[in-house]
Length: 196
Length: 213
Image 1 (cartoon, each protein chain N blue to C red):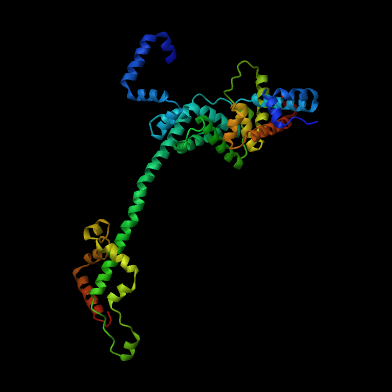
Image 2: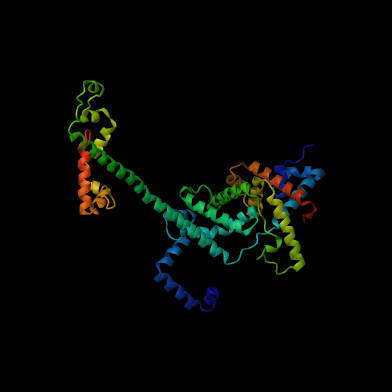
């Protein structure tokens, strides 16, 4: 004999079973017991209520949710403005770096060529490289040159590429007259050295 | 208080109320929100209209809290989980297409939040003597105690059910959702929902033994 399926028993327990199952239920003690167990368990579960929170809880709960939602909204708004900052900051840094490199390379290309060694043996081992050749040989410098081509002084100044008061200028300005004289003497001596 | 005043002084009260409505655009906006249907209220939320989401919270907070309480068995966790449900709902409201009712959609979020929670933490049901605010005015103290103890045992038995069976039992018995709706929430079939319900009740019967009414 085929007993009732779980599906049919659930429908019976909820009063939604088709009439076709009634004859079997009348004849089958096992299915009647199963149905009684399901109904008893259902009643036991249904009798358990959720304790009602304090009447003050609901307003407090709504306020908490409101605060969390407001924080979420503020965070989203903040994230929107930060995206611009995230975009502009590296671009500014890249422009400043390009300017520094471009100035450095331009200064280097204007310097007189280094003194060629007089010894033929040494001259044979040291290749003579013109600054323009250096620029052309390094393709990554083309990018730097392109980026810095239209960068004027004001833009660089606005981007923060300015000497700071705490740098070498400030140190020199703080020297006494005697110390400046000594500094000039040392620098002149250093520049006079061969190969300097 | 307001209702009693309105009953005692209906004309004066109505005059005060109507003058307030006319004088305060915020109140008028709130009333307009209150008159919106579900889709309109969701659209108002998506448009960041003040008070719209508060109204959704107010309408559904009790049902969501009770759903969470049925899962975790204590007030603190139920409160935290309910807040999480509404926060997730707020984040996802723009994606709500109205294919189901807002309540069903919130239940789905609630069940997912609760299932995630119970998968990492066993429900910590409150001790019997901590349950308050149940209306027991017509029962004797001994009857109240017996009822609370029985309820605690049933809660504990439900808490030990596998998560899907527990979700099915909670949604079916306490929230009286149709099998089809439970299937949508659990992303399952009606047959699977009935099978889960059958096994949940059978397990409950075995765990409670002779304690059942």
